[in-house]
Image (cartoon, rainbow, N blue to C red; front, side, top):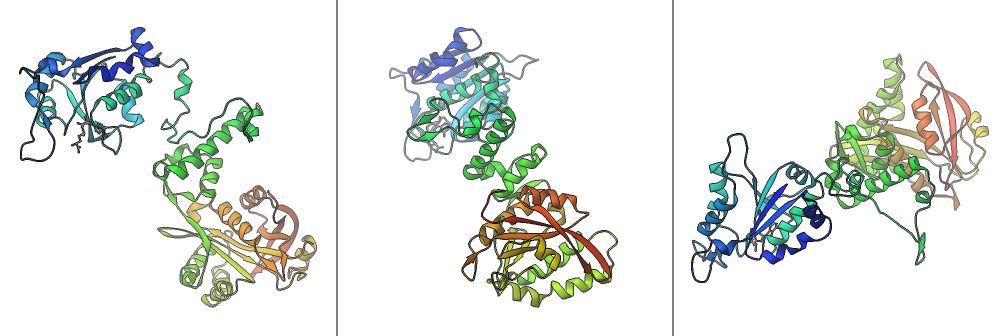
Length: 452
Ligand code: SAM
């Protein structure tokens, strides 16, 4: 690749003789030529600027000087070549990103025109764009203002040159770094000593288990990106996400809705949520009924257990009921209802459950529903984990909750697997009816306050 840089401060570009870029030049992979713009100034003072048309502060770089310089530096147009890319650094340009750097790395010839003062007369970019002598790209290296384009030129050359074949000693370095193909920032990195000033390298990195290390690194990358650059999470390609990714994302408040990651919040519901809960609970109950459930039974269940009154009662009695909702800007995405006993020793009402779950006080994870299109995306886990965290703060007559139990339809293996991941173990069975249909549930429970 050839790069021509035009500047009034050629020495500013001296660092391009150092490090990997310098080596690439010496190896002949990169041909950098720095030109002093003043060589094309004609007057005694070799001036390159003049006062701005229309008045105002500062000076503007003259088009005639730039025109002579660029006419000399740009090669004559060839029929089968699009010509070089003329990069004009400016804070008002297109943002330099890793993908733009990768595009530029495929070009054989870049010319960088470093502005100073208030910038270069706008006709320069206009003219060279129109004549076909070059493809003009005004480019910004960030949302701040520098004194001149030289620092931007250094950034451009370094960002592009390290992508040229053979420039980095280990090309794998390019695979797992920030702004790479996976769209994530890189997570934290460590080296010896293992312990430094009381801070240890995370144990997994010393395990030698490459699968676990890769998973750990990806989880940290997702966490860091969500914390620092939520815009990058919103732009992730969901096709590249596996189940573990989705569950980390959900624990950080992101879930895929219609092919895009959207933010959701998990919080306790209040009276203002009742109307939405009524509609949502009826819809999700219907969606979750096993095929063949009679319509009349569904309706009767909704009227009896999911009425407006019942929801008002639940959100109005936090000592007995905990309603947690997940919502995005688009509305409710899911909810959990957990029921606490009235007194510590109160057993679960069903005797089969009471004997399968001996711990007291025992809370019931009574309902956990997510929108049908959001199943299997980690949202239910995020809701259940938020419920555990909240239940751990609750007391039944000053006793902490000892266990949480739930019943899940025995045909629903997906739900059982999900609860198993959340620390629940099957402990028994129970039967219950929705109208005339008898259901058999697997009863699962987990101690509270312990990690799954
Ligand atoms: N008046 C210009 C404006 O407000 O957009 C700023 C001119 S700046 C003081 C002088 C020169 O620094 C620019 O012509 C450009 O070459 C360079 N420069 C400043 N900030 C830059 C940035 N964020 N990215 C790229 N080049 C920048």
